[in-house]
Image (cartoon, rainbow, N blue to C red):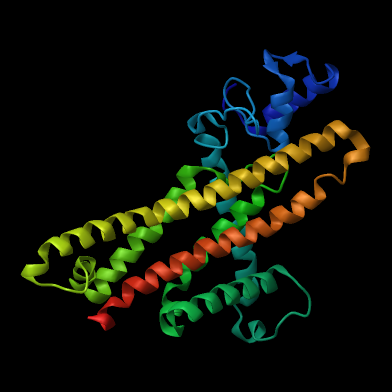
Length: 293
């Protein structure tokens, strides 16, 4: 099956599924994968769904990756841009911005979310570094939260279920960690990788520690990417299963996905929190080395 847009797969699959009792084919495509694509169940080019008991398709052939992942990233970017412009229009007047709104609005949500991210960062690295790195970590928090949440909407895929997207996020944190580590500590940022004992007689131990440290640092962006991708892919797949079951059950099963949606909402928030917490810890560790040496 090609990598077309979700709505084309949906209408093709839905038409064939309804008219063929779930087994008909439309334009040479099996109806059930087309419907499952809309409901959130990923499938490969051969129309084989990612079964819980069967072997999964190659991740590179999954429609949640590649072009569709990029499209959903752009969609998240446009949503955040529009909401940010809306909120900025309400707070650009400093006198009016001092008066809090008495209801939960988009401005209130942004203020609470930014305050929560800043509070988390301040507890880890202190107030001054938290203010400095808030634009970086805050941007990651907003992007990951909205990307995760997009997977809760039928017909859309969470960009964070794609390894390419999460690896890009982890790579940004990795690069920022070492850029600011070198900026704050200079050669000490590299020196600490050799261990606490820097002497000629400890050269074998220094080299061993250096290799271990380098591997651990290289693994960090991979661990950030794999953790986020795996959790969101699993969450989205489970949600797709229950959405498909609710369709098969008809009106009697319309409440079937509700518990999974509630659990998915929790996963959405927790995974954004975990990524930002680990990113803050990595950066805090990098800029602290000057004090240790």
